[in-house]
Image 1 (cartoon, rainbow, N blue to C red):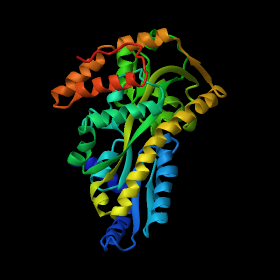
Image 2 (image 1 turned 90 degrees about the vertical axis):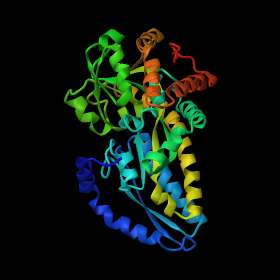
Image 3 (image 1 turned 45 degrees about the horizontal axis):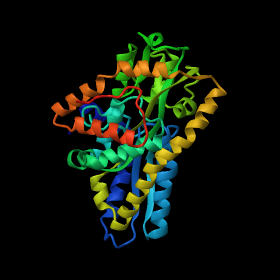
Image 4 (image 1 turned 180 degrees about the vertical axis):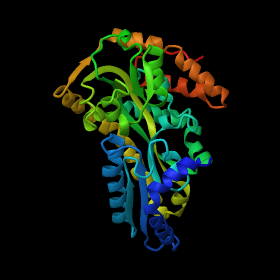
Length: 366
């Protein structure tokens, strides 16, 4: 896969300042790995640190990798940071890592519907668990059952998957009050990638969005709501243009990844590789536990600022019923592309149930 001309120009404008750092890093890695190296890694995401996983990249992943490497080896680790899209935007991170523009990138699979159409599989089964630690366990089980989900990064995109990333439970924030699915018909509401179908099947008008532009989009009425977890509503102050947050319980979704460029990976000393995998596994678990811990706090914070309410199970069931046939359609489309769509979705349903989840509507895949 090659970058389009427009993406190449966009990357060049944003990363010219790191080119010299990349040369230095390459020279440092050129020495004998038995010698102490000063390792510089460019780490980036299109999202701001106010988004939980991006903040954890900075405060946990970077900090722990640096600390453990420097405590346990003779090597040192330094980072060139590219948060909030300063090097790669949300839709550019997979390619940015693939082409070596950044060494490590965090991104949502929602922005890669062509390259990674199967990896957003939990989105295809809405109204799943709202517990991000359980969502992560479900994803881990599915990845173990279907090796393709991990292997495709190395085989097609010149990068190694370091960690899966869980989000907190998704609800619906809006600039207006609503109580029934009918209230949303024809209303423009933002989402990302496949979760736009949650809106389309319910009769709302879906609008593709990205969090860095969410505040402006809500303020200027490009859309009147967002499918979003509460931490973003708090940290990005989306409650200002949209002072209603409704607990509908779409589910916690594990559909982000943290990856490293394979060339960078292969240059790292073996002992650093081992620590990197260790820290990545811990970071993966942090995305689940941290989101779980913050959820109640973020909801409480919103309750002090705006109107927060929880709808009854009948509204959730009605919305889920409108989506009842969609997972089967998605599985068939993925199967037709030669991907294990049916296997992945059935495995996900069964894994969720093994952790005690009860679906408001039990989706049938075959």
